[in-house]
Length: 384
Image (cartoon, rainbow, N blue to C red; front, side):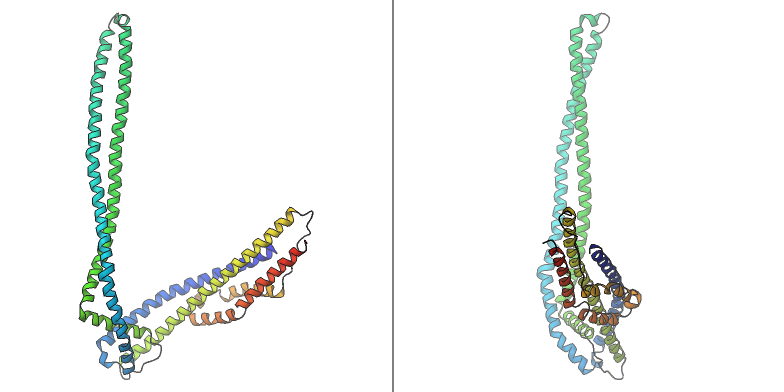
């Protein structure tokens, strides 16, 4: 049973991997198509804005119906930029500037403190060196000739003091190095922080400049009207699904192209939704099988632990269960050519529908798990 579950999960994972590749293909092709769609949308939008009088009444009415909500959205955007987005960006930029200034001020405060520590240490060191020179001279003078014998005690006392001073000088040297290292480290930290804050401030400043530019345009009534019209035209064209007759003009060709591109957009959306939904469904089945696998594994461990008292487990799989799992490798073959499938999003989306209504329907999945649960229950009942 454990081998069977493992094999089915492996086959299921191979199918999921295959569908992941299809999803990647769809995403890549959709990105390329979206650029083409948006370029055409911009071009046709511009043509209609410049030649509104040549637009058929049906399309003109649709554009006019989209104007009021677009004007409302622009007014809301104006208020949001003015009252929220721009003030927040300005405050963020100011906060970064204050932080940078505070760090520099702190560094300037630290500088004289460390300078004073260094000067004090240097002065103490100079005094110790002076005393060391005196002791060296004293020891040298008292060590001439028989002086070593006569002044042995004094020489020993001077030498002990000399060693203590040498130790203090070494300690001062280490303290001096510590002060200098602290200053260098602090300077390095502040330099890195200043560079990071500078980068963040520049990004905030760019955002502020953009928002101010946008605000200038939104505050201009004529620009607001032009923007509302462009947005209304664009929204209308982007939703166009049926041909709009515009006899005798190049615009009719443009409108037909937009209809075709919009249908292609829907096809990609459907395909992406289908492949994403199918992957999610299969991962859910795999998660359920994993839970079943753990249950069977627990029973197997218990049987092994108490093999002297428990009879061997025996599992029976229903025909529905084996039929359900026999589909994984067939489906992997069906979806094996991601290049061809990627070029046929509508066909792919439609091929998923019968699967979700039949072999992979909610009822089929519940029946399969129900049968597996019954099989485990019956196997475990043999121990009672």
